[in-house]
Image (cartoon, rainbow, N blue to C red; front, side, top):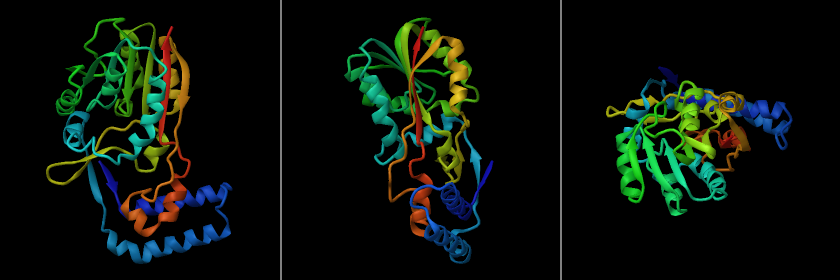
Length: 284
């Protein structure tokens, strides 16, 4: 369970902005610092009475969480997908068509892209609700219910494995990457994206609203770049590329409350901060 207080979040954004100024980030000068300090006082005096007392957010597993989220997952305006998708697909564009697995395929957004590029695709996900939407969206692909820890594919059966924005939900990377390596043919490719750990610390933990309106947080591992490497390299997965696309400037940085109370601090906190981490591996 996590206690989430909106005032604490806004003050945290102010703190990140002040730390960046302290480190000498361009444009964050004396006037910027004094503006932040005045804004902190305003938040404490004016915003605090309006922002409520916070909530105790519960925990939900990925099946339950994505069962709820599946209804709106494909709605436009998901800022993480907008940053991740172009980089992820540029990597896919360099690979020849073949047999592909889209692991944790969700609603099939990358499954459909792979199929359109001529791959023979199977999508696997643990959420029946997400799979229902994927089947409707990509009728030319095959889909199976399955877990990342025990993929329903034989050894050395695919040329490409993709897994997008899902590994943050597993407790340990090594067993899952081991499954990816198992189903890859020699010389096959693995393309993985995930939310960046710095974005998690800026409040980016995925959540769903339960039937009673209560916020439920999905599992979120704080994996560093070294964690991916330490799990992948012993499996014979060689790094070809690593990208950390950054958040682009947005008036909605931090959400509607940040826009109302501290837009300049929120923009400074998110500016050029990595949003996602994207890996391209090849099996020896």
